[in-house]
Image (cartoon, rainbow, N blue to C red):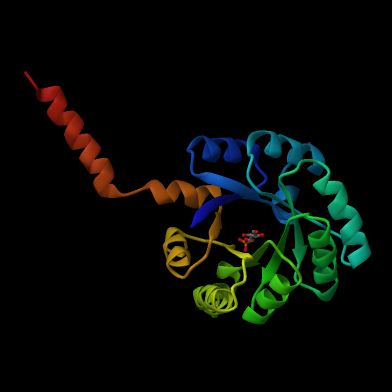
Amino acid sequence: MKFFIDTANMEEIKEAYALGVVAGVTTNPSLVAKEKNVSFPDRLREITDLVPGSVSAEVIALDAEGMIKEGKELAAIAPNITIKVPMTPDGLKAVSAFSKEGIKTNVTLIFSANQALLAARAGATYVSPFLGRLDDIGHNGLDLISTIAEIFAIHDIDTEIIAASIRHPQHVTDAALRGAHIATVPYKVIQQLFNHPLTDKGIEAFLADWNKRG
Ligand code: E4P
């Protein structure tokens, strides 16, 4: 399983990218809205200048025609832009049009296996099931990842599964075990992944021993 970072914040992207573990970036309108004094296209240029992997940029229009127009403008910003489209009938019409033009897509707000299958058949490059938001309403987000992974394997579908709406490190481990190809992870959770008290204790003990040497 690969890691994407789930943010539109440049400092977070720079820090995470420097770690050498981040293969791509996902943004959404809520994440972009947190960023002040920068236009969306300018932020996408900054991100794609740094990160060569997939950078998801979400369309705002809700009709297929509007999504296609917006998506083409976003895709023109850099070759590694992936157009993020919501899971609706119009969204899938747009995905189908993008797919025919070789524009990569990420179908977002996936909450059922049937939605994932539809998106894949429309030509989606990625589907994004939202783990945390399912957990929030008492459903099992991880079971959804397993089901989608199983269906895609049975039917030889090459659409990749991005585990999204990740809330904590255990989601990351479990998404990897359940067959997600990618987890898109907030910066705070990426930092948490590094932590283990025995690592800190071990470093302290090694340094203490080193400093005691004769
Ligand atoms: C990423 O593609 C999603 O937009 C994001 O992970 C949603 O996360 P949230 O449920 O924490 O808003």
